[in-house]
Amino acid sequence: MPWPAALLPLAAATPDPAASVKEAHESVTNAASFIEENWAGWLYLGLKILLILVIAAALRSLVRKSLTKLITRMNRGAEAVEGMALGGLLVNAERRRQRSEAIGSVLRSVASFLILGTASLMVLGALGINLGPLLASAGVAGVAIGFGARNLVTDFLSGVFMILEDQYGVGDKIDAGVASGEVVEVGLRVTKLRGDNGEIWYVRNGEIKRIGNLSQGWATAGVDIQVKPTESLPRIREVVDAISARMAKETPWDERLWGPVEVLGLVEVLLASMTVRVSAKTMPGQQFAVERELRWRIKEAFDEAGIGIVGGLPPADEEEEPADPSASVAAPSALANPASPQALAAAPIPAPAAFGSPRITK
Image 1 (cartoon, rainbow, N blue to C red):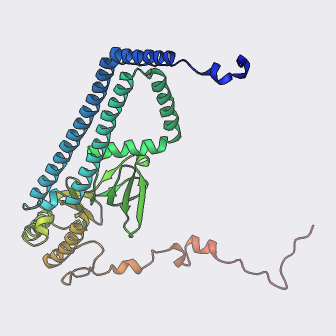
Image 2: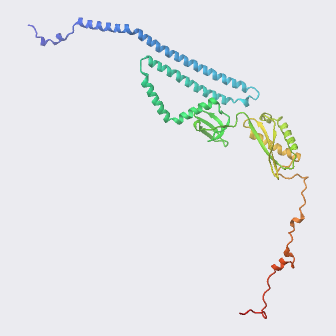
Image 3: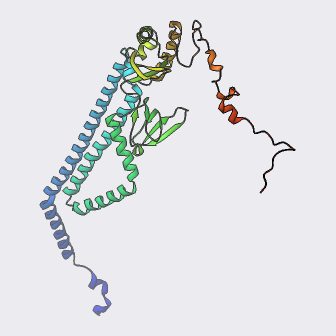
């Protein structure tokens, strides 16, 4: 007896094998057609992105190696000069090394940022991504970060320009306004100074408004000598020239003195003294030592030559002038003569007699 159709659900739901094969064939055909139509574009896009990445990596590596070689060459030049005579006076190896490393680090970072950033934008553009909103968002984020970290940005930019311009370096003695001392370390954000008492100052580069470098070029040692106005100026110049000739031949003053000791002339002329200024060009940072040595030698030489310095003891052969005897005598007075009108006017009035004195009655 035949079964009703309602009792045969599995038989009714069984798919037709021919229809399934046909649908699978159509799907494969459509996929093959899609791949056949677009494989050339995909291959072109992949090769384009790969080429961009390869060129960016090769360019970044080339730039970094070139910067490294340039910095190494600068350091070799500094070492070559340092091995020459007076090379230590002209080049500070540690200063050159730190400055070269800082400049190289900045240049390498900037080069990597520019190359990789440009490559990333080119890849996104090749993928068909709209870069307008991305660039706008990046601009807004950059402005916000700039306002929030403006002090950090100021310190960094000030450090970069300071290093590029070589305003000061390790070993220099500077006056930065907020602090002064010898430069121990130079960074892109902070400069480390050692003060005269041994303290360490950490100065932000953005806070430095003016810099006085006491170690660049040359320095001047100046000594003012107060002598009596009766001394012979040609004799003073002759003694100072002899001191200069001796110092220029002695160690270590032959290196610290970069010029002869000169008598510039009179600075001040008074009734009791006159001031003679002596100056000399010295190695940077050695002017104070030269000044102390000059004072020592000038004092000894003037004592030997008999040149009197104001404030010192007089020479032994100098005789004191006799005192004026009239200085202790008082001036004559009209009151000394009792018969003079002034003495009579200053005489006391005698007292009235007790008895027999006239009376005045009304």
